[in-house]
Amino acid sequence: MNRPAQSVAAYIRKHDLLRPGDRVGIAVSAGADSVALLRLMLDLRDELGIVLSVVHFNHKLRGADSDTDEQFVRELAESHGLEFIADNYDVKAYSADKKLSLEAAAREVRYEFFRRALQSSVNRIATAHTLDEQAETVLLKLARGAGTRGLAGIYPKVAVSRQPSGVSPPEPKPKSTTPSSQLTIIRPLLGTRRSQLRSYLAEIDQSWREDSSNEDLRHTRNRVRHEILPRLEQQVNPGVCEVLAETAEIARAEEGYWAKEIARYLPQVWSQDKQGGILQLKFFASLPLALRRRLVRAAAETLGMALEFRHVEEILDQQSDGNSSVLPREWIVTRHGDELRFRKALEAASDYQYELPVPGKITVIEAGIELETFVVNGARETRRYNPQHLVDSRFAKGPLVVRNWRAGERFWPAHTKEPKKIKKLLQDRHITGDAKQRWPVIASGDEIIWIRGLGVRRDFQSNGPTGVAIKEVAIPIGQQ
Image (cartoon, rainbow, N blue to C red; front, side, top):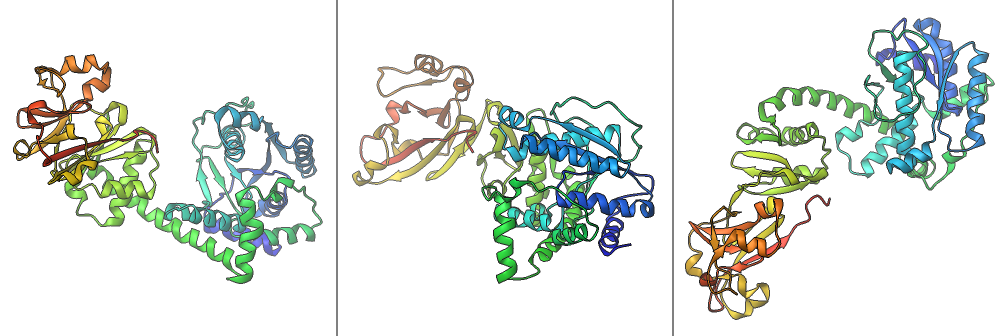
């Protein structure tokens, strides 16, 4: 057996990628790496006890060149007596329809094709991701701010769901019975350099086809491949690709450990309900920071959110009742005592109440505003506030709360002769629906002293340049 085949066989055994009897579809694009993968697996099939097929997806992105690639792969499969499983799809049209980049669209339809092939013809699909691609992926993830999950890079094997992803190319007709084992995509070449594969192809006199788009430096990965990594190899460390690949392996082991820990701890601190979910802080607060960060991220993922580091830190920094953070996909998280409640911005409960510090600041996500109070001691500070929002200090001594108004409550605006029902005041301003229900007021005991848009109650306003100023700023809910 040749040296590259020995190395690939060792990698397959180390990561338990294949078992005797597996029906393996080799994903061949026509490029050097995938053609080398096919030839290497042909060398290994008797030793591994597997049955091979060739799978090819035509993305229709390069016109006649794409069709020529498909014909090349078809002939290669036929020359070795292998079943050829192929499909095609207009990726450019799919990209435009779904508003995805071409790269993301191509990946979606290609992996949907793999899923269908796994359900109808094979139980493993092998792709030709190399050690070089692993290094590129880790470097890209690091540059874009990934944590250890991102640094784990490309996994040697990935289980594939039996459920469709929503992409809808025509379904292929089943050709054989799928084995009962888990459907999996494997990457047997993750331990092999791209240069080794080309040397191997030269030795066996095997041709391949070059994809000109792989040289296009407008694509970020191509710049990393052709410019950044070669420069790092020349000027920093000749083994930088191997080091990055080792980093990915370390990170994958870390992620495997943490996945078990999160599965153990999450049910103790997190519960989902009809509105979203609740994170209980009593036990949570005593946990190590690394575990708390991962639990917050895992809780959000159960709601379909992928949090960035800054989102996690904002959530963990919430110290006071009523503190809120705006999250991706129009979610909010608000602290209520010893709970962090995750709610959709438009579905948050209508009733809310938070203590308003003086001086201090609070975000009221339900009302879409940030309120700040500060003590004013002289005329020099008049630029910082609207005089209609200055409360006489006598009426701001007790604890203030910000909440939504309640049925039957009345308020005396500065421009009117007498108090009116808040319901009527809001109707006159054409405030309706959810916005009306959530409209914020500030109360001192049973007295409403301030309403958004109307300022401080007439008989509670300061008559001089001293008092407590209330400043409001609208916040853009859902705009990340």
